[in-house]
Every structure is written in C-alpha cells, then in structure tokens.
Amino acid sequence: MEVTNGLNLKDTELRLGLPGAQEEQQLELSCVRSNNKRKNNDSTEESAPPPAKTQIVGWPPVRSNRKNNNNKNVSYVKVSMDGAPYLRKIDLKMYKNYPELLKALENMFKFTVGEYSEREGYKGSGFVPTYEDKDGDWMLVGDVPWDMFSSSCQKLRIMKGSEAPTAL
Amino acid sequence: MDPNTPADFFKGSSKFHTYYSQTKKGGGVIDLGLSLRTIQHETYLPPARMIGLDGYGELIDWSQPSYNSITQLKSEDTGHQRLAQGYYNNEGESRGKYAYVKVNLDGLVVGRKVCLVDQGAYATLALQLNDMFGMQTVSGLRLFQTESEFSLVYRDREGIWRNVGDVPWKEFVESVDRMRIARRNDALLPF
Picture 1 (tube, one colour):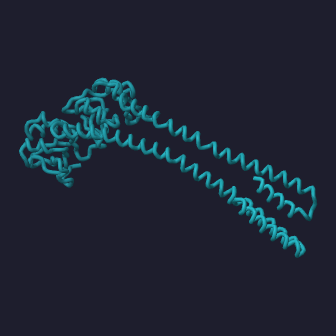
Picture 2 (picture 1 turned 135 degrees about the vertical axis):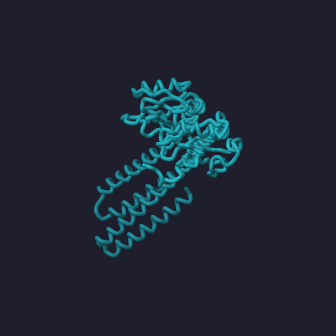
Picture 3 (picture 1 turned 180 degrees about the vertical axis):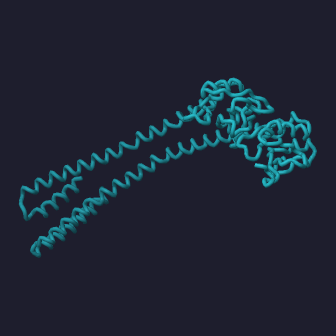
C-alpha cells in the first residue's frame, strides 16, 4: 500500500510540476476517495453470494414435502362442460363411486345427466360425461370399475349428445 | 508483496523516464495530453482484472451446490414418474388383456370399453357392440353379416390390426388389445 501511494505521489508531482502546489493537494484527496469507493464495491460483491447459497440449501426439502403430500392425498383433474364459460377442478379421491361423482358434477354445472346403462350409456338428457385416459383417448364414464376409472382418468368433459354415443 | 514491489517500481521508473524526456523537449500541450491518457489507462486496467477474477472464482464455488441440488430434484421427479407409470401400465395392461378393451366407432370421438369376460362368443360381442353404437347408424351395425357396411377389426398385443372372427374366441380374447368398428366402403354410405 505504501509503495502504491508513493508511486501515486510521484506521478502527481511530475504532472503538476508546471501548474503549481495547491492543485497537488486536491488530486491527493481525489485519489484517496476513489480507493475507498473501490473497497466498498469489493465488500458488496463478497457479501452477495452467501444469501443465495442459504436459499438453495433450504429449497429442496420444501418441494419434496409438498410432492409427498400431493401424491398421498389428492388427485385433481380438470372438468369442462360444453358451453360452460370456465373449467372446474375436482379431487377424484373425494368420491368413492360413480353416483357420487355424477351427483357432484350435476351440482357443479347445474345440469342433469341421464341414467347410465352398460348397453346404451346415458340416455335421455343430452349430456354425456366422458374422460380422457392415460393414453389420451376419450372414453365414456361408467364402463369400467370405479378404481380402474379413477386411476386412469386425466381429464373430464361433459359433452352434449351430438358428439358422444347416446340415444338421440 | 515481494514480487509485486519490483514490478510497480519498474513501471514507475518507466513513466518517470518518459515524462522527463518530454519535459526536456519543451513540453508541448499535445504531448502532455498523450502522456496523461497513457498513465490513466494503465492505472485502471489491473483493478478491473482482479475484480473479474474474484467474481469468477466466487461463481464457481456458488454454482456447484446448486448443480447438485438440481440433479437431486431431477432424480426425484424421474423416480416418481417411473413408479406412477409402472403402476398404471401394469394395472391397465393386465385388465386390458383379459377383461376390458377399448372400442371406437369411426367418426365418433368418445370410445367405449367392453368386458370380454362377460361375452362367451363372437355373437354376443356383436350384440353388445350394436347396443353401444347401433343408434349412431341408420340400420345398426350388423357385424359379421355380409351385407353390413361395418367391419370389426382389432389390434393384437404386437400392435398388428387384424380382422375379428378369424381365430377361435378364446385365442381372440387372449390377444386383443383394442377394437375398432370401421366402415367397409365409404362410397356406399347413404349420407
């Protein structure tokens, strides 16, 4: 440090030999200030990384906890109805069989679904509950056992009769 | 400290020498300007480089833990997905092979599922499918009849589409993966 200051002083003397003595003092002050600013900048940069490290260390456990909860307790799927302005989401784990699910859908979208029969599907109301399975195929709700349905259902859609197999 | 001192001293001496020679010549204004610029440029470069090196080193230290964390997260995701897929695939495949299979009628978006165990022969299967899809057509499916406009095909476990009815019922039930009610000849359709 002393050596550096010495060099600066020498340079100052050389440059200002011509003008005069007063300007020499002003330059010395400016040099000191610039050095202080640099030190401040260095300290600021050094203090930045530690907080980031702390945050990163704390992040994974929170995510893993949430994932575990999601996997165990809930199974949300989107529900859309032809003509309805917005979608809904329901937790399939809250229902134990088809009648419960269909009743909830009727209350949610204010419609009435016909009675299901294996032979003819939903007859009489013009609305047909369908679902998209894990293969991406749209199937009629009610053909397979409840557990098989709830484990493969990805989306639900209540179609109008014109697009689904039902009695006209 | 020791190695730095000689370097600084050397630089200082060189600057001194240059300036002194300029003074001897008479000290023109242009020469003085050049000299000042040179000195300022040299004095500013070293600190910038040092700061850059420090920052780079710090970044390296910081990024390694982060990379490890990301890797762990990806591993967790992959494991979960594999478990889920395995569970669904196993259940779907086992029931699909011997119980429920998908059926689609050409032109309809929504498919149905048929439990083959409930059927005992091709004839009852034809009746079931006609009940499910018959109302979508003018005169019913009339599967397996020569004058019908529909034909029933199935995809076996190897992914090959075959005509339903060519093999014995039991063999068909064991190999069917899904079925499709196809129209024989669109040109003959009344509508």
